Amino acid sequence: MNTQTLQKWNKVRLDEIADFQYGYTASSKEDDTGTKLLRITDIVPDLIDWETVPFCDIDEKDAKQYGIKKGDILIARTGATAGYAKFIRRQPEKSVFASYLIRLTMKKADASSEYVGRIIESDTFKQFVASHASGSAQPHANAPILKDFEFLLPDLKTQVSVANILSVYDDLIENNALRIQILEQIAQATYTEWFVNLHFPDHEKVKMTDSGTDFGKIPEGWAISNIGSILDIKSGHTFKSKSYTPIGSFKIVTIKNIHDGKFVDDFNYIPEIPKNMPDHCRLSDGDILLSLTGNVGRVCIIYGENLLLNQRVGKIVPKDMLFKNFIYSLFRSDNFKRQLELLSNGVAQQNLSPVQTLDLKIILPPKMLIVQYEHFVENLSSLSIDLNKQNKNLRQTRDLLLPKLVTGEIQV
Image (cartoon, rainbow, N blue to C red; front, side, top):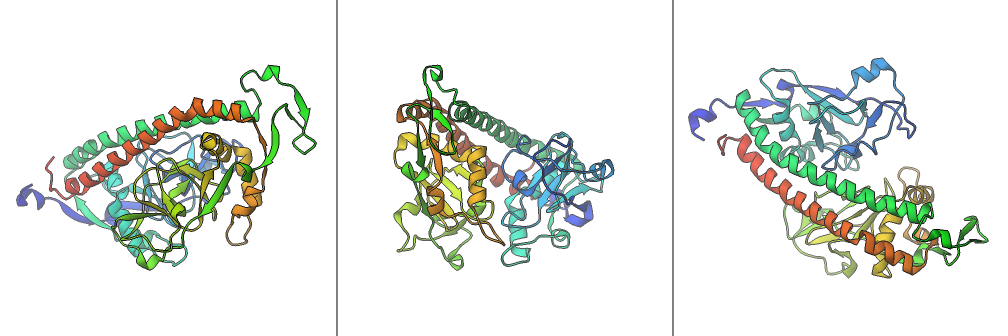
């Protein structure tokens, strides 16, 4: 782009073109109150899964004041994901945003919320927040910090053109994310039907017998066993944060990367592997990871290269790889997640003990049935990993393109 054109692009501060609003303070509820409460954890993945967003009690006046609308930009202002943001591309069902989120709305007609939203979702904005956020244990990024973020604002026509180009990538990412969501729902629904509702293939031919435990009657041929009989949980390595670098050969997988059923692709790096790091901390496609502190019991399947396991995260290692998808679905099931939450302890922060987790009792189906489930879902799991990798590549391409578009290096 020529210099004359670039001169028409104005450098602006965020507070010059946007109003800031803090979210609504309320406790989340599982019961349907008619209004959903969007939280930080909900905006981190590529796609907001509205089915998993909880509800809250709120009167109509506050519901209107904090109601989420198409075009809103929502930013996480605290915790490990401070600076993560989501541009609301479509009008959602009735919902409000929680207190640890900040909403941006455009106050100038010559500022496109879609253009600004793409910039706020970018790594450039995350890096700005990371370098300015206060708080050692728990980073905070409030409005006074965010208002100083600066970027180039072209004329409105150019803003719309830039947003349209980036939307192509966002549409592909969103479509893949929807496919991933459907694949996981199919696998989880099958798990529930077979191993929770006990409507497994030919269940009508199997007698129910008394287990002699609190589980009551179980199908004949099934057993009561502890989790440790089918898997191990290996803890991550204690990396020194002072060794982290903005770029490097190896990526550190921390607690912030582990969300419920979703692996967040955002890392710190180190140039080389410490000599005392256990071999199990080298991660591979398809490994199952478990959060051990904070929001305990979250599990996800990972993908990517040169990934290393950090402390506070556990690696679930099946003793028989034919049990892998059964184990993942078990940890994703609502009942088992509740058991993990009850097992965790800690006043300031919940902590999950791998040793105690391995002692938890489950109803263990016969190996033949578990293998049958594995064969049913293995293609779903493989396709899900492939789609996640596609999204990773799409995000990288989009994020490389974005700074060239918003600085005028590429003309639109």
